[in-house]
Amino acid sequence: MRCEQLFEGKYGREPEDICFAPYRICPIGAHSDHNLGKITGFAIDKGIHIAYSVTKNGVIEMTSLPFPKRAQWHINEIGEKTGDWADYLRGATWALSKEHVLSYGICGVIEGSLPIGGLSSSAAVILAFLSALCRVNNIHLTDQELINIAFDGEKNYVGVNVGTLDQSCEVLGKKDHLLYLDCRDDSYELIPTNPAMKPYKIAVFFSGLEHSLAGSKYNMRVDELRAGVYALQALSGMEYGKFNQANARDVSWDIYQTYKARLPVPWMRRCEHWYTEFQRVEAGAEAWRRGDLEEYGRLSFKSGWSSIHNWESGAPEQIRLYEIMRETDGIYGGRFSGAGFKGCCIALVDPEKIDAIEENVRKKYLAAFPEMELKYSFHVCDSADGVRA
Image (cartoon, rainbow, N blue to C red; front, side):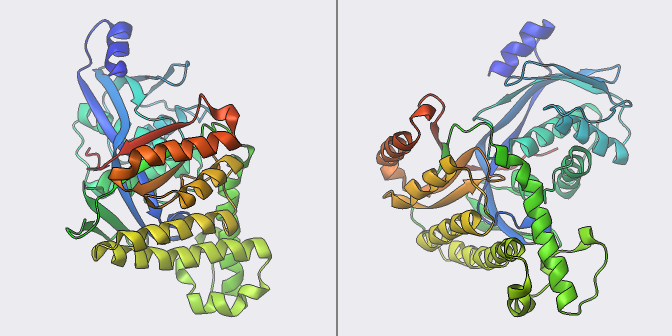
């Protein structure tokens, strides 16, 4: 791995250890976790590696392959966020130090095995980093503690309105199992792949889109959903508290159906996505349980449609990729992955048709966006076990 080589070149010795955290996919359950919905997802066998060694003086010094700037801080002097890639690691240090005494830092080099965008690389970086920092400080976290600390760092330090979907998939995931998670109480089930299910692989289509002006709309979409829920509580006579305490999970489908016509259209659309996605997740879990891959895939395609038309996310490149996937033989289902404003689409595909799928999608996509010739990429993955601290 390049991270090992760069570590040796930088520090003149081999790293003491290497931590790995997988990326994740969520075929059904997008834009749901931040309002205590349900999700289904997998950890995959591609992710983040960190080659590292302990620093006895408490300094943290990190380098990431995609970024030229080295980041450095002390475990007891983390400081404010600076707006760079290392804020996620500063946030992780901040969140861990609130719960545990840190005595040692680390120096390390970070390497991702796929392009950045759409597979929750931010959560994977945080989790791999936390795993390393816990090891050198002899801290042993439960799975739920690891999820909570990673979530705390990203939401309350970095300031992204995430739920626990990403961290949960990347920690709780188990190879050849579908994670079915209730974000209200963190209860979950790992549903094994039914022996009667058709074989499948996980395909990742990177659009080549690295930046999108729409990216800043992620937090706004969450606020629009919450505004709709807040209004539904008031319209129906429910008791309600502070705005940021409003959650769609606390307002029933029946109340939404009764009062949705009185909501501003954007708020209604965000609520429409959340409520119908909740239903798709429950139906998808049952489809997976009985081995009905076609139905699970169909629901994933419907999830993607709702993200475009109700959540109103997706750059033109992603939308075209999604449309091509729906037209391509051998793809059971798929959708955008990640916040939905840049990055990739994911799909469950027939292993025997991978070559034809790759050729068809690439040809049609580059016909629409020829400027992405050198940036578009296709990858095949499998489900995997989650990270352990």
